[in-house]
Length: 519
Image (cartoon, rainbow, N blue to C red; front, side, top):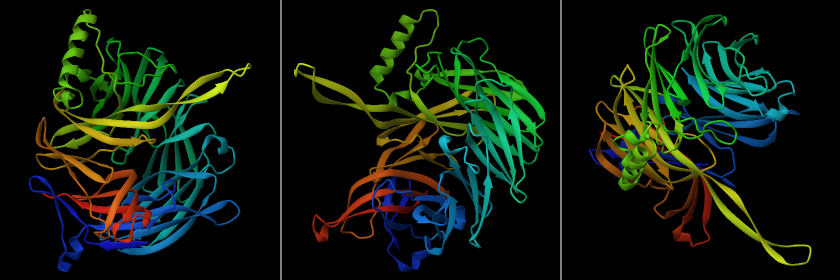
């Protein structure tokens, strides 16, 4: 493993420029880079940002800790990316890492078995790492065999695990008392084909907050906002109505405003379903404020009506689609762009509520081969091969407390093809402007917006490597994630060549760079 200081700083003053620092006196303010040798990009290296306390890099080894467990290694770095400690922990070999959350000075990791291995006793583990002391605490648990973790929260000494159950069609919350190991299992909502799409715990009000989607029929989806006390008893359940509009709610998130006021926001579709019977494309955004358990209204905003949608589509295409909408739907039925989108959580910013949705589509290519029939005559067979999800853009919309659209903006995403549906866009909100950024092919693309205005168009910055002789050949699984203050981390796998040593001097590494945005 190698690390070095002084690689680069991404500075916004006011244009996005690349600033290099080489003064040793600035050591503690310099961005850094870590490289870990890798055999392939299928390895399990990951990072967990821990705020100003630093960062954890970890991976699953091939070492057996005992008969049933594999050893996972954890490297802890301070915020200057200097290694503080290296430790390992045994995790059941049947479990895979799913997610992590940071609480105070503790990193909480959730490991879960796949559906085929859920019957084998312990089917999830929670590993808690008290970062400054390097102390590890491991809890074993068992969830219903047909359940899958959808949300994971740690509140004080309890783990709250939101479960979706495809077999029994019942959303449940499993509460694990970490010191004692005792378990409580609470149903959420009535029986039916339901899915938990948002979950949180309010320690002030001492309630569990759930938002579930329930399939009523192929053409009707119902959202329910549910509040339960920590003992599972119901406080209230509110159905989010579409007010007879015929639209299907698709994805959603919620955010507390104040006291008993909540804003639910998400995406909707016209009701056209996929072959599996579930809508998978988006027509627009919806918002619905809820006050003291009562839905006060619902608002719908078609993507075609967004002012900045032209940044994701050719303006002539937008005008053509709008004309078709008017011509083909005189009765008022909407015409849809039918984007597939990945929704972020709602973000509170300067008295507004920001929602980000990334657009993508599944990409395929066709492969053909020659075969022969019974008589030896040749014929061609073709089949489609899934290449991954092609991300194309990000839409940013802002609402007030009543769910009214204030402004919208967008940014094109280039050259991201991945098999994982996780967020690619990172936001850095200032007092009056927002930086939108993503990592692709070893470059950081960023744009500055001031609500619906674009202050600076997209610029691209290239990180510096360990050596000026290093040249990037390829990058996979690149990510840009928030760290603390105005610092971010970019990670991924890179194949690098040292041009001073000839064309055969190549190395594959998992890397991590510290990035600083400045105004």
